[in-house]
Image 1 (cartoon, rainbow, N blue to C red):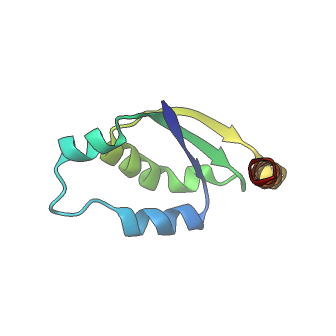
Image 2 (image 1 turned 180 degrees about the vertical axis):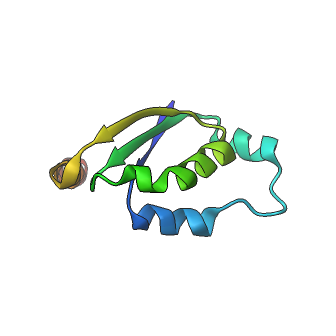
Image 3 (image 1 turned 90 degrees about the vertical axis):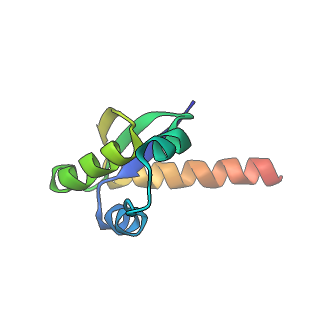
Length: 94
């Protein structure tokens, strides 16, 4: 099962505002789309994740996924993630 990783900043909030529930969405169908995922891990890069608790709760309710973990990773954690992704891409593409 996969996990959704989100970061607590306005970029994620902007994404969610575009993705939000539409009047035609059927709860069971939406939950079925997300059912292969194990849950949500929140990555707090700026130390402000609590500022987005309403949006996070709305996303959690919409997807039917639980919050598995909250991690304070800071900007160094973001940098490390990007560097790791670059490394994996280089290994994959040779």
